[in-house]
Structures are given as structure tokens and as C-alpha cells.
Amino acid sequence: MNNKTYSKREKQMYLAGLSGQNILYGIITSTLAYYMQFTILIPAFWVGIIISTARIFDAVKDPFIGIFMNKKPERIKKYLQIFPIPTALLTVLCFVNGIYNEKNPDFLIIIFAFVTYILWELLFTFTDIPINAYPTLITNSESDRNALLALRPVGAIVCSLCTLIVQPVSFALSGVMGSNSKSEQKAFICTVLVLSILGACLFQMTTVKSKQFIELKTENDKNQFRYFIKNPILKKILLSGILGSLRSMLGVVMTPLVNYYFASKNPVLSLFYTVVLGAGSFIGMIVSMCAAPRLSALYGNRNVYVFANIINIFPNVFLFVFYMFSKEKMTDIPSLLFMFVCLVISGICLSVSSTVQTFLINDAVDYEAKRSGKRPVALFFSCQTFLVKIAMGISSLAASMGYSFIGFSSEQANHINLFISGGGIPRLNHEFEPLMTMLFFLATIPAAIGSGACVTPFIKHKSVRKKEI
Image (cartoon, rainbow, N blue to C red):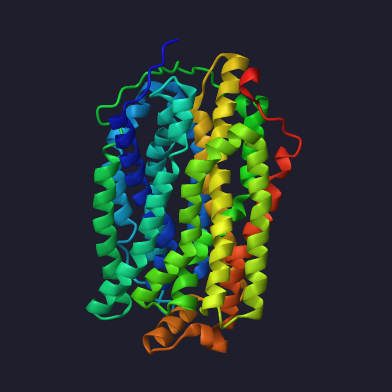
């Protein structure tokens, strides 16, 4: 069979679209929870309920949307042409809300936050599954397909860059506008608006002049969920992903950790420490793009996945233990260097693990093609979006429980904001030590637990190699 594959231009357009989609994703995942709790002062309990419920609901419905797309697989490309602009508009709408007052609560603010976020998650899924599956449709060459799938961290890198700039830019604008809750809210809305426009423009480029070489058969079988039971690779991927949900905790707590422990909401320091904490993820994505395909070819997808997660346990545990002995000194140069090294190791492990998970899903699709003659691409790749969202939902709920455990309320959030605006440094004030310790705990220990738990389904797993599929 002659290879039909994407051109260099199609590859560039796909990566541009992936970058735009991840800008919109990064705005919501890195900023919205912080914005709701610390800017418009919705209580931590309600923020946890909103984020976790929306993400868990969104994750659960992903396989159903995957089944829906399998019934009309020819529309996968159309979804990528229709939904980018509406998704960007709804991204901005998530931030257009009132400021909550605990003494005189307006529950319409909570309802509006919940509804807009649910709608955003629903709309985003109609682009997330297609953009993950699209590389399998524009080439019939396995090496070209894996090469493009291995470049998916490009989108994650752009997402990280978006994470780096949203808060510092918003805080800088807020300082110009007046340094209060209303000015901070306006600053966030302005920043989100500009980035959403950029994201929509790039996202719309995904399928520009792109040819689809693989035609998928319409799936009329009403019992597509049987794949989750009969496909052994997919079962292990799903179980592993759920058990490893807490690996996402650093992304959930990074913003309050940076702004309250390290930077005290100083825009320049916020950018600097976000770079320091986020560099591990950034470096990990670059290493993953280069190393993951080679490591998988040499040692097998299963082995690379297992060892990457086992190694990830250690830097997280070491970092929290180090913090317990240096509670007020994590901004010192030796402490920063130690933290940087730990986060780089963790970032590499997580990025390699995520990339290899994509290869494992591709193995599951190929296995199913041999087993049943069908390639349920949309459904299988919906499992990856399911796992990402369920992980964020569980992590957000865990973070909310952590804040509640130390009694951190919206009133205390306002108190610490006022303390900072008066020139205070929270990490040096023993009044805020429980919050600082909880932030470091949430950023490290749950990730170590999740990394250990997620390898258990693969302990007896035998890698599916080309000869077997």
C-alpha cells in the first residue's frame, strides 16, 4: 500500500491549531479556579464543587460524545472548522461575572460560574477529541502518525506559556487600574479577551488545506462500550489514568502557590517564579518530544510508562520534605535550585508518561482493528480527554478539601489579599503558615501517590508489538 501522508504545510497548520486550542485550554485550567476563589471571592467550598463537578461531568460524557462522533466520523474535520470561535467566546464569558460578598451572598454569581464553565467544557470537547484523533486520519504511515502524535507537547508548551503570562499581565494591569478586587477582575477580563482572540485565530487554522486520507467506517453498533471491556490495552489505560488522577495537582495549585508564597502578587516576581515552577513541565515536554518515541521503540510503551511514573514519586516526596525543613526559606538560591531540579525531573517523567499514553491508545486502536476489523478512533481518543478531565476534577476536589481542612474561607482569602496590598509577605507571617504548608503538600504528595498508583494495572501487562497487531 502506497503511503499517503500530510505535507509540511499541513503539519504546520495542525501544530498552529493545536497551539490555539491549548491557549484557550490554558486560560481556563490555569486561571479560572484562582479567579473564582481569589479575585471574585467565591468560597473555596463552592469553587471546589463547581470545578470538580463540571470536570467530572465533562469527563464522563466524553466517551458518549466519542460514540456520537463514531457514528458520523466524516464530521471530525468539520468540528475543527466550526467550534474554535464559539469556544473562544465562551472562554471570555467564563470571566464576566460579579464579585461575591460572603456577608451578603448572591448565589446567582455561583450559578453563573457553574453554568458557563459546564457549557465551556461541553463545547471544548467537540474540538478536543477531534484534534487528538486528527493525526490518525491524515496519514496511513504509522511512523508519520507517531511522529505527529509525538509533537502534541507543542500544544502543551504553548499552554504553559499562556499559564506564565496570564497572572503577571493581569496583576500588572490591575496595579495600573487601582489594585482592588474590581480592578483585578477587569484586568483578568482584558487579558483573557486578548489571548482568546489569538487562540481562536490559531485554532481556526487546524484543517486549512488539509487532506484526509483515512476514511473511517460509520459505527452503527449501539453497544460501543463493549470496547472498554474487550480491549485489554484500553482497560488498563483507563484504570491507570483514573488511579493516577492526583498527578495533576501542581497545575491546580500553582497559581496560589506562586502568588501567595513566592511572589506576594508582585507581577515581576509572579512571572519569575511561575517560570521557575513551570520550567520543569516546559523542559519535560521538549525532552518528551525527542525521547519518548525512541524510548518506546527501544523498551516498549508499557515499560517506559511504568518507569517514568515510578521515578516521578521521588522528586515530589523529596521536595515536600525539603520544604518542611525550610518553610520560610524556599526563595533562597539553594532552595530554588533544589526545587528546580526536582520539578524538572518530575516534568520530564509526567510528559514522557503522557506522550507514551497516546502511543498506548494508538496500540489499542490497532489491536482493535486486528481483533474486530474496526477502528473506533474518536471513541478511543475520547478516553484520553476523559482521563485528563477526570484528573483535573479529582485534583480540584482534593485541593478544595485541603483548603477546607485548614479552614481557609473566602473571608480569609480577602484578608490575605488585603495583607499583601498593605505590603505584607504571607510566607513570613505565621498566621498564614497553614495555607503555605497545605499548598506545598498539595503540589507534591498527591502527585507522588498518583504516580505510584497508576502503574499497578500495567505490572502484568505485556506490550502489544507490531507483530501482534
